[in-house]
Image (cartoon, rainbow, N blue to C red; front, side):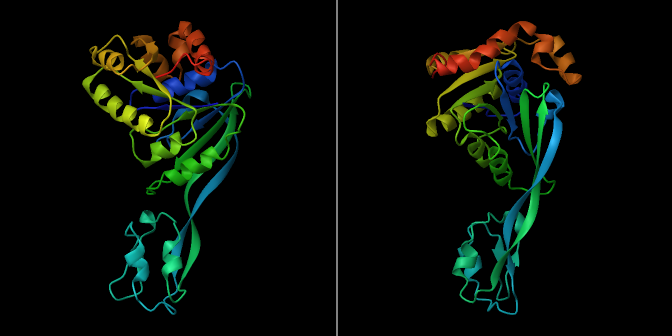
Length: 282
C-alpha cells in the first residue's frame, strides 16, 4: 500500500507525519522523500546510505553543419526550450521536458540527444534496517523535479507499505508524487492560510479520484475554520496533533513526533490498518 502525505502549502508538518508513519509502522516500510527540492526526512530518520544514483535526462544537441535553420523544432516546442532567429536554434536545457518531439519534426536530422544530470537518488536503511529510505535531491539550478521523483518511485516495491513524503502545493511535482498512490493524507493547520491551501489540495486529490483524509497539525491553535470545512464537505479527519513546546524542542534536535508525544504512536500505527478496513474514507 502506498500512502502519500501531502498538503496545499509548505510548513504544515508533512515530513513530521510521514516520518511518524514510518517509525510507527508494525511492518517493514519504505519512506520515499519526493520533496526533491527540499528533502529533509533523512534529518529525522538518519539513514545509513548504501548507494546513490545519478538522475539523467536527455536534451537536444544541434549539429550546426546539418541544421538548415528552418526553425521547425522551435515552432514545435511548447516549452520554449529551443529558439531560432533564422539561425541554428539555441537550446535552453532547463526548459526542456525531454519529449523528443523536436528530433521527430527536424527535416534534416540535425538533432541528437545528450544526457544531462539534474539530480541524485540516495538509497539507504534506517531504524536498524526496518525502514528503507529513498531520497531524491534536485541539483541546484535545475528546475524539473518530476524526473527525479519518477526515479525515486522506481525503487518502491509493489507489495509493501510505502510512505511518500510529497512536495507542497498542487503543481506538477505533487501530481507526479501522487500518481499511483492508494491513499492520501492531507496535512493542514487551523489557520486561514491552512484552510485556503487545504481546499486547493482537496480539489486536486478529488480531480485525481484518490481517497483521502485530513491530519490537522497544531490542532489546538488558530481557529475552527478547518474543522467546519471538513464537517461541511464530509471529509474524514484521521488525526489531530496538538501544539506543544516539547515538539518544537524535539524537532530542533532532529527528533520526531513520538519523542515529544509518545502516546500518539498507537494512532499512527493504526492508520494503515484503518485505511485497509475502509474506516478512513472521504
